[in-house]
Image 1 (cartoon, rainbow, N blue to C red):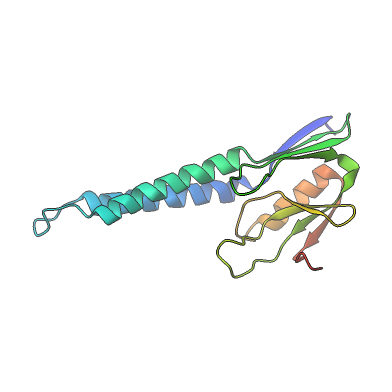
Image 2 (image 1 turned 90 degrees about the vertical axis):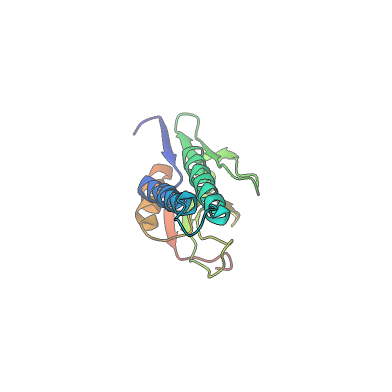
Length: 161
């Protein structure tokens, strides 16, 4: 194994798919709002603002993907997690043997409580690692991350378990 390994905390296929969706949806909304038919001399500002909002969301998701990384230094025995998050501090540094499991939470039905990959430390503390609100393709990525960290994987584990 390499002495220093680095990996995105989210799978790149889902990240680029989400960015592409918001870019395309924003372009369609912008075009529909700015294209003025003969019976409507004014542009539809709600659609134009909605399109600009979608482009901003795409940029946000791209930045969140690019700046959320996990780095393992095997020679020093450390793990470094850097998350791009405005709501909570996502940076964590610690020993490699402190990580016990990579946990994939089940998807709750709330909009702002997205399921994500977490690192469970010895003692039960959990640290958020990923940013995705889906379980599509996240199982394979969790397994790859666990292989890199030399730990186990817990699938569909809520914080109460």
